[in-house]
Length: 191
Length: 309
Ligand code: SF4
Ligand code: SF4
Figure: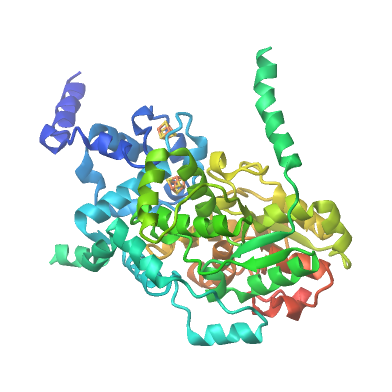
């Protein structure tokens, strides 16, 4: 009995109400695809079938859903593990409650980028490339020339004006300009 | 009575698929990774489709499908996808992709925006700035859907001039052709995929089963963490090898990069040897249709399929 009450006390210490954001759950539920996070009943199917959970000992989609329900925003926003989801969408297909876990992880990533102004460097490169060229990779001249030799039609010229306007309309051009890479942010934090 | 009710929607759906007229002309959405790294997929696909009488019209002024930016800003990803969908609506043609990621992204954007009015209004207000409006009238297909639904397996068989009898392969269909199944459409089974297996059988090659066929390749997170996707793919390559397959067949440039381009790196990281050639399905079909290996750029594959060259 003593053990249990000790554990209970510890549990209460772990959940300091000051760290709880009671509105966090609703913030997530407003993001597209994340509407059903409150319906998660912790069965663990998503974790059982998640490829990343299988190959790590810390990435657990079930826990992510619960952490949102509890309003423990700080534990999730900026958490590097979020960037490991491969978007294989097995969790969406298998959840008996219709919770779209991978959409929820996308929402958490989006909020992390907005709130912390940091993203993994690869995404900065991807987004900058699209803004610069319309494509996610900068196509070297040599490759474009080779297309001719290979009997392939020239690559369609992207409409960079349109692309820039869409970056502007979503406000992402500003986010991108200011954003640190998560790798840098981490190094700064360590100093 | 209850059972009847349950069955009906399924029957209707099947009927609809059958009634839809087979098309022969498609708007080709090439995407980014194929022209950047895998001309072998594009060249072999164009050769094969040309011979099958499938006309490709290049999608003008397209941009990246949007997939790579969804993790950082989903609204931007949807806007980029929707711009491509608007181009397709203007051309009034079904879109064809060779890439699972492009298919998954464009198809999902199309369905999500049709269903969710609030989201559609938001994206349309972005599109207004470039004089476009998403209406939801386009149709998105991956190569495998066109080969099975528009060309048809029967017709495909007629084009197989040198069947690959005796060749044993395995397939990796890839996540974004299967899941989330509620948005994918078409008739594959997300738990036990069959479309690519049927397409392989047509070539005369034998398609072998192996453990965990629907497991992800892991390539999407390689820019953040290399170790985990390497472990995932090592396991896949082990399972395929254990089945006795001589080659692995893919229909996605991203999966192909993982299993072919990265295979020597995986071998080095774990001190193992696979030497398992990875073929684009269009290369396999091309061989069966009588194209020469060099016409299908087979020697461009990183793990050399020496027994086919
Ligand atoms: S499968 Fe669904 S209900 Fe079960 S733990 Fe995961 S999110 Fe919750
Ligand atoms: S989509 Fe992400 S969270 Fe879901 S099963 Fe796949 S890797 Fe795991």
